Image (cartoon, rainbow, N blue to C red; front, side, top):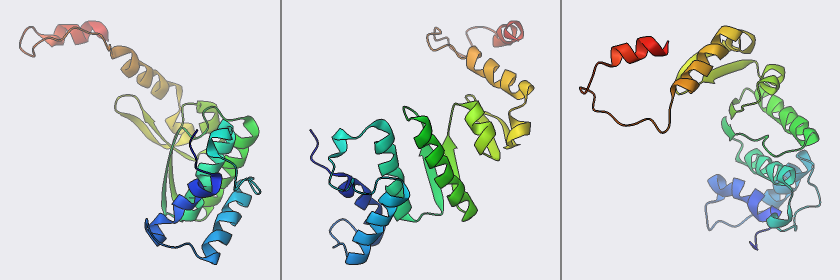
Length: 175
């Protein structure tokens, strides 16, 4: 088991302010407590992180982000393996950050979740497909284009030298 506690993981959000060897002040400890309360984990400070559920761990990571007080927040699939209540709570926190005029970039594959909660979307499929208002970006023609990019990619395709044959015919047949 990993000996870190929830409070230890959340406190890592203070590193930009305190550094690796900096001492935590009373105010820092209060900030950690407030961050845990904000994500619904008040009283979890001493819990070992390896005893947390997926949703509790994700809430802990969001509490750490709260302490960083960053203007740019990058979240990679923060809703995977998380219960619906936690998703809703974390979405509300993201909306709060958005209201504070922070930039939040979230990687999400659940398009319904995107449609319901994110005003602007970048649709990627090996390359940018569309970017802008979510309703416009997730139009059927853009989703079809993204699907074609995905299907055209063959992980086990044999390697061929660029000059071995004319790829133009291959592309014409693929479309």
